[in-house]
Length: 356
Image (cartoon, rainbow, N blue to C red; front, top):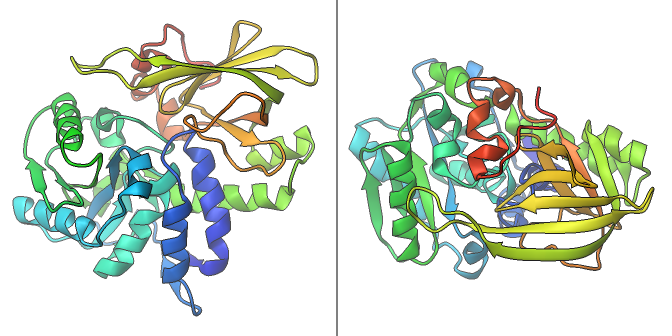
């Protein structure tokens, strides 16, 4: 599959939807991708099956406070430094890159990095949506593990987290980020392409592009049924946000938790109240108190007029929105991996709703 400049708008919309309210602002990455694809250039995105089984694929992405990424822009060498560090540590050269997370910023930026480093790019990721923690990646769920991993921050520091459980790597990463400007380029150890089918979520870049194309083709403010068809999902509510409440979330592994909150709106169709529970992403939807949708399905809030996804940190009272649900990637409906992303993985005492 080739990505051209004409595909960027659809791809940006698709990855923003899959962010489920998180994943970071896509604007900066979209600008960089458009610049890369200017003058008729294209970028090849390949299924893992088209690579030699022994080809080494390095997952990369931005970790930390993605809001800080838009304020403290990269100098240009962070990803090269992170990839080089993990290559040195493992003694294996990267043949291609892939994203750690299709949702949001990381659905676009790794493609730019792949071109800059002269490497191939694989149509897969480790999340299939937006996820907040490293110990929720598919490589963690399947037991392959996150370590070793390298981080490179804009100030020049580069660290390798050589060993440890996925929880320890998550905790160590957060500690590094707290003292280094809030975000860092992140690279995992190379994975043989022949093993990606067992530990990654395939087809996520092509899937995001197709999703974005359908949604953009539906136009602004489409009827409910047309929007649901474009999403291949459902519209949970359409109405005005009445209240947004925010509070500290429960801690994880002895560390402070992410911010937690809820969004309440009244559905114009029947007056029912829909409440969304959110952390870094939208996690659970309740209609008049009854759970109707949850993670691992992707819950997204769209500006009713423009259709642009509204992130958890940007949602405010008074805006007219559509709350939608997209089916989870099949990887996460597998009973073996579902516990990693079900509501209880976030401290919410509720069984998954909508996952099959």
